[in-house]
Amino acid sequence: VLLNSFEDVVANPRALFGKSADEVAKILGKGWTKGSYGKTGTGWKFTKGDKSIFYHEGGRHVGPYYGYSSGVTGKVKIIGPGYKPLPGDKASIIQGN
Image (cartoon, rainbow, N blue to C red; front, side, top):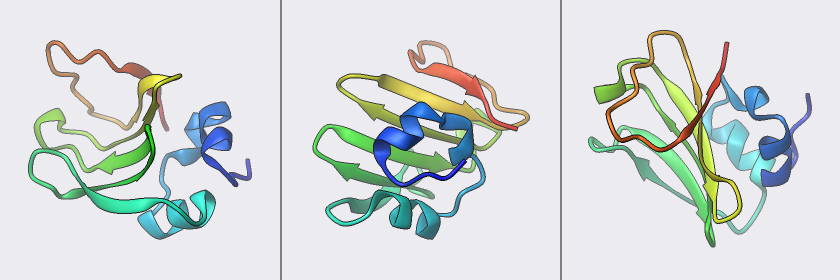
């Protein structure tokens, strides 16, 4: 699946799994701001308005996960093997690989 925009990621979330920050930057194009993500700041995120795409190696959740959020979609996580949800996490979960 070829991803070329935030909307493509929302339509094909599993295709995000395994992408590098550089690959995601190319998918999103101009106008997005890159920052760190997660309590320890070891993950990455891209934001534009109320939209974001993020990745974290695991930390408190153990397994790696990708995700996206917006006012329309809410928070969605695409999880890897070994991911452990935390109590109170309201994100929708999609199995990655």
